[in-house]
Image 1 (cartoon, helix red, strand yellow):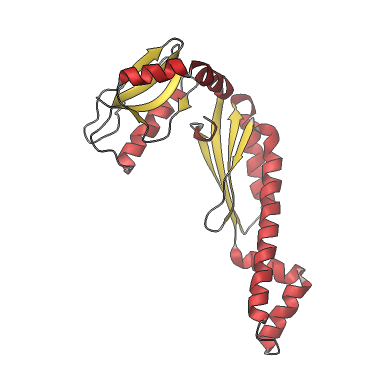
Image 2 (image 1 turned 90 degrees about the vertical axis):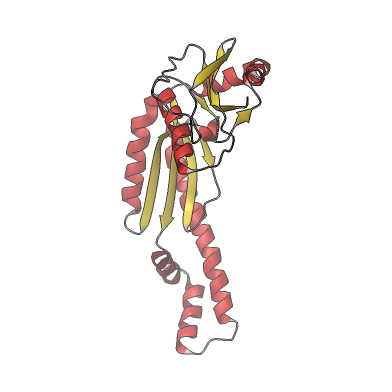
Amino acid sequence: MAVYIYSITSKDHPLRLDGLDGVGASPSRLRTVTAGPLCAVVSDAPAELRPEQGDIDAHQEVQRRLMADGTVLPLRFGCTAPDDEAVRCALEERADDYAYRLRQLEGCAEYRLLASQDEEMLLREILSESAMARRLNDKIHDGTADPDAAPRLGELVAQETRARQEALASGVIEALRPFARKTDANQPGGTDFLDVAFLVSDEQDELFLTTELSLAHQMGEGFDFRLDGPLPPYSFS
């Protein structure tokens, strides 16, 4: 029977799995597959697996329980194998790699930071600080602009927005980098200018959180910082 794989841990991990539900409409009991020094937490895979909220929550709850007791190499939602023996073979074949990655994640959690800036505030800044943008905007409003003034202004504002937001994102990351073992920046979506994951050790956790809060206060109104964590270190596993 196909198996669903949640995490890889050391076989010395406490593995408190009691009371946890696996994925699927009729979740099966969680169990472990061990090979040498490694252990995989698995359950029978449901016949149909979709990323529904209940299953995602069940997957996440297994990670949270395991993280509370030790180091976890979390697998992303939806990872399956043909059977227990296939899982055991994978643990054996990639034992050195998995052991190394577990050592890298020891005592760490992931924090994900997203940030955006109010668009009207940003436009006001650009018009205030860019003489060219301000002249074009004034001519458009008083009716003396060339026909191509509006597209030129739009392109200029877009260029200024990219430059300013890239500088903001770089500044935030560099301010927090000293308190993280690793960072993983993603392409921001929507109105966000920042989407980055930080791998933070227990020893640096307080400094990281304090610095992030200080940055958010320094940026002031018009900026929206959203920090999520501590999370399973998916971005670094």
